[in-house]
Image (tube, rainbow, N blue to C red):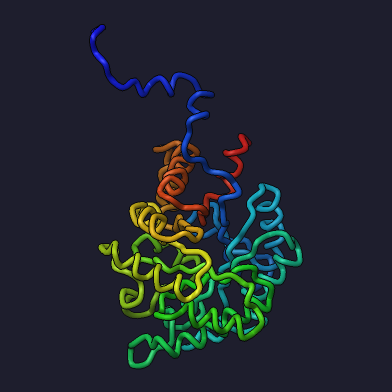
Length: 326
């Protein structure tokens, strides 16, 4: 054995402190965006059955949730409004006093330093559950852009720090950027869901947002999970149109795509750790099959290692506690 010469990688793993010194990737609570679902009514804090630990909140119960997020050091939330009334054109999406706009105002008044992101889409506001205007069963692209721009401007007026359009219509970033600029919100950034796949991992979210399509599916506007190069084309288009952040959604089954987007674009990359990914871990943990803390932190670490700068995750509150040793 004395004459052998080989690499000794274990030299850098001999103690916890040495491993920490050479660690290449880290997850911090400052990396997190926490999604919150807000509904109309009073005294509502209702657990979403397919997402244990995640709730619907009315405005009068939202304050305690925001207080907890801030106390944990999580810097940002994204708000999803779920209206009582829906119609064919999603008019509650761009009403100045609809549930999402009121939730934005409430959050910014209670915690001005909290970065409040508005999800900008029509699906939870339309009676058909699709992300745009429909005519004879076809989602109309350009007619939808006008409504998305109106929605973004209304959310910015309410105080949203970031607009996050998730609809995947062609030209949605350009339309929203133009609408915001014309309304005097040229400094409001756009966090584009530019790389959004048509995924089975969204199932629990559709229960949470009451946004299941009433017919067909979203495959004509969300991306085919088989396609990698298409992600680069979609991201490039949004960057050219003025996107300030780029979301890759889902995250866990698309780590290769996160890396591709990271390697090709220099704007901040957001991994959306979606509802189905959350629900699978929660179900396994509740059955005692996995160590929830270790699984979650390893999963989030994989997203950072793949190239994400920011992680949108329903695990944010638990992960923030675990990272602080609480």
